[in-house]
Amino acid sequence: MVETSSSLLELGGPVVLILLAISVAALAVILAKTVQFSTARVGRHGLVRQAVTQWRSGERTKAAQNLLKDRSLSGALVRSAMDAIQMLDQQPLSSQVRDIREERLREEISARAADRLFGLASWLKALDLVTQISPLLGLFGTVLGMIETFQTLQESGASANPATLAGGIWVALLTTACGLAVAMPVSIAVTWFETRLEKERAALEVLLTGVFTAGASSSQPSA
Image (cartoon, rainbow, N blue to C red; front, top):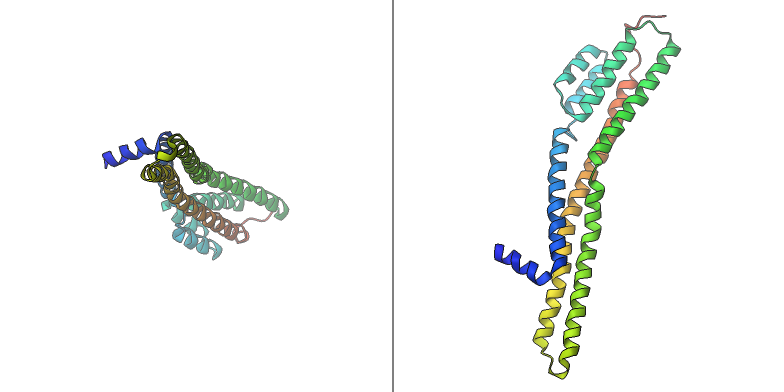
């Protein structure tokens, strides 16, 4: 395995070495993003949906308490919204003032959600850049290799060996293969991360809307 890798580096030259470095960096980012998504429990909304259902049915204290056990991104944001609304319910506010404060609260929670999602999206652009630049680097290496091969052919003149020419061409094409080998799995990873993020964004919007459109608690004191 080690000998094969050394042979690839020797045949492909500096372009393959650059692609190897890019692939190692991309793998590190993919592993870090996987851990980040797993820690934030992206896509796991079962307990949060149940809590929102309880909230809308009037069991507000129980719904907020149930989310104390949830460590997901959506759970933390929904719980913050619930706690803040319960504090509003305990204050003797007029309907107009309460509506204004609730709207400000909704904007604040939405901004916090956008910030958390932006954090999850960090480095995805870098991975996307890898998917774009790796094939180009591979093609660049192939072009350089073809130029070198045909220079050798020109210098050889009539005594050129077809086997040597064929060997030079496949070595040149090696860099394109390496570039595609780096780009394809990274492209799959980027698509997977972006799809999970879009689903998380849509789920957060639905869950937070469910909390804020449930109406004021019946226990709210009147001004």
